[in-house]
Amino acid sequence: MKILIIEDEPSIADGLKFNFEQEGYETRVVNDGPSALGLLLDGPFLFDLIVLDLMLPGMSGYEICKEIRGFSENIPIMVLSARSSSEDKAHAFDCGADQYVTKPFDLNEVLSRVRNLFKWRKPDSSDSNQAPPQTVDVYQFDDVMVDCPKFQVTVKGELFTLTTMEVQLLRYFLENQGIVLSRSRIMENVWGQSAEITTRTIDNFVMRLRRIIEPDSSKPRYILSVRGTGYKFIKVQAP
Ligand code: CA
Image (tube, rainbow, N blue to C red; front, side, top):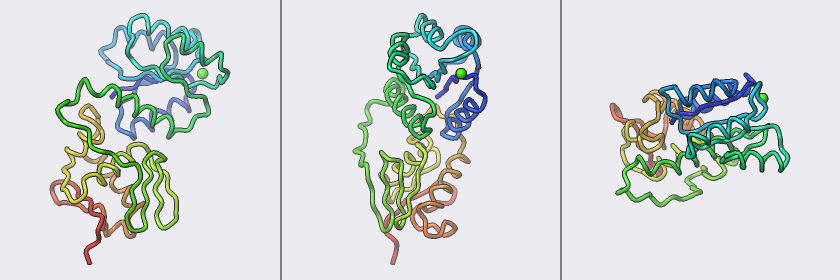
């Protein structure tokens, strides 16, 4: 999945880029409308999402939005703007924006919205003969409670907030208990086929989850390593 970030504030652009890349997405940052339109029209890049600031030098986000809609009706456009009036939002939607998030924004909210956008776009590429698994929102085992919609894990009463992909990965483990999951299977099912991540990324995510849910992350009892393959999640501790 590739995201085009159109943002002239370097700290915001860098923060978004970093976090999107942490989640396995590919990004490209430009800081004005003409560069963005040039990329979209001429470049070999096909983007899956555009994250757009409104107050930009030269050409406003509204104008950029309208221009993009002139040649692409489908690409999702998420506006991130400090402008918070209902008129601004209405105008952005009139110009063709799909989503509007007010700055300062909650990063988890942005990541969750991005994930949901991509979920919508998935059916054209993924195999349709596979029924979606039943998903549960809250899981509990031993002293651990996982609340997926809230991106929260409580361990012995202590609260931790996860990123979107951490929740997705943990949920995948919980839905596939006792099954040996290869890294490539995890990559395909959690990040999606087009994710530009390496197996090392998965190991890093597992390490982070272990630090949260394992009583001793150096001797994991829930997320076990399966040598040469990947991981296996078990909920019940061997006596
Ligand atoms: Ca700006």
